[in-house]
Length: 180
Image 1 (tube, rainbow, N blue to C red):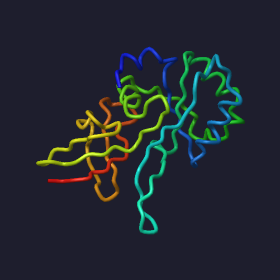
Image 2: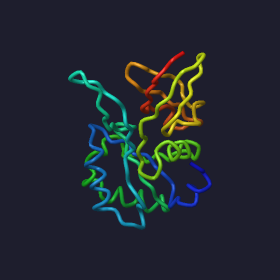
Image 3: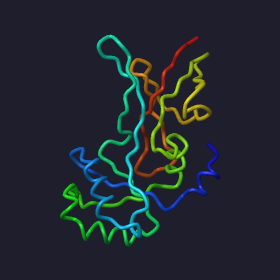
């Protein structure tokens, strides 16, 4: 994906909000219901595909990419903070101060490349030849340098972020179909 094209679509700055007790979906609905468009452009969670074996068969399943975190997009950080504080009783998940943390531009770039506009990272596939990973399809294609570790048994890859912000590493689906 061409980052310059993605940059033109950007409505605002991304913020990440911690949601304890796996209440991301509840908080997402509350944000959409109570926050104005002046404060909130979009609210979403990132997901990824991974393969999981049960009953002797491999199944594709969708999992949260960052469990316990909700992402908010806004052009007006002060208005967003103000409205979140105003509805603090509605957002009962704010047990840890409900702090907004800004997503670093480098992290946002990687997330946009790997997950696209749908905020979802599809399964990647590839092979290993002479100790070098080559991804042939999926969002990791051409981004092999981001892979930190591969778990072939679980069919996942740990992907590093290029900055020193909050989101240092994430797990995405990667199936290695051959090794030589």
